[in-house]
Image 1 (cartoon, rainbow, N blue to C red):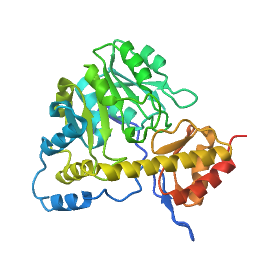
Image 2: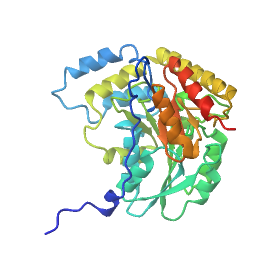
Image 3: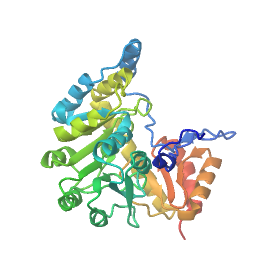
Length: 357
């Protein structure tokens, strides 16, 4: 007799590599800059809302996320029918593949990009079509459009791109969407949109309102600092949003997470102040890195990218010795999150030793 065997595609799923915590070093305060987490505590009112909600843990959460959808709809000026919640924006990628792809269908996305894309695509039985980013870490949108075939069901634009950093402009996105067949779902993954500071930045809401095939995916994990609660949401034309809700895990977003997300939306002023502070820290770090010889890809998220190639693991190890955990991608580079400013002296010191000749 043989034992039960999973589907062949399950055996092919690549492992997700999470950012590791720092290793304690004698005499050093350690810092975790490996997971693009928000270094701040919860926004005002969030902990209280979560604590109150936790007192009802014996009850199931609102499966329809009614109050959360109402708050999101009001905040963005969109109908609640155009919303779908999930356990982080990564949950939405799984739902998109499940809702729109049959076995062997193609999902086109840039690479290197978000590590969960190939996992979700493979788990869903679809096929990844990875289009290399340019030398400066940008999406090659012309090449991505050319990669669309009759089997393509979804294309993903990660902007700002995680882990390389650059964001797509509105003009670039409009030109790309015009080249993609209308039956293909165009996903604009905006997990880091709050940190974008550039000319002609994307207006995601206006974009989805102009197209029947555009889905925005967003999260409360980054700017809002709710990474531990896993709340993401999609904004899409009603039929697409309904498809995402149809394949969602029942009761997937907990009652506590929904309450925390709603309270976070109410703390807009404090959120804005914190985001601006992180953007300022990002600018300061990039300037210091340039002074020691680095020309980095345009950083539009809450992280910077070092295109180190084969030296990525050595750089990460050197940061570890300095009490800083970073996220290496072997053979490609290292992503360093914008966190506590006091950690940056050590990051710059290590970076100076690895600066290009």
